[in-house]
Length: 158
Image (cartoon, rainbow, N blue to C red):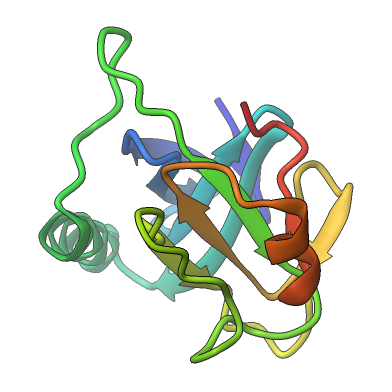
């Protein structure tokens, strides 16, 4: 069982885009619970957007709300062994992702954009990079597009 910030992960859901949600409880006080978003990479999971709760029920409600909202916003399906989508992940290492901070090439619009909403860059890809957020594309970006927008490709891109 995974542990993060002292919480034991009790429940997770992972979507085919590599994003997911986790619910964890404190081993010595199971009512103290937390919910995170995470990105799954070849180097493990990058957790962010942690919310803490004094009751397991409140955490479960938040977990279900996040899952429902994510499905509604992005129309994504749960990842299964039979169904694995291929996406290209790029990290914004210089600034949070915002208007005019990422390329929008014709025929290769971003599938998903995630800002970590921290007051600093956070380690990603097993600590190999620090980033403000990430963008998922269905096709790879060119070297020029990455350079123009100061994006770094995820080390585990296909």
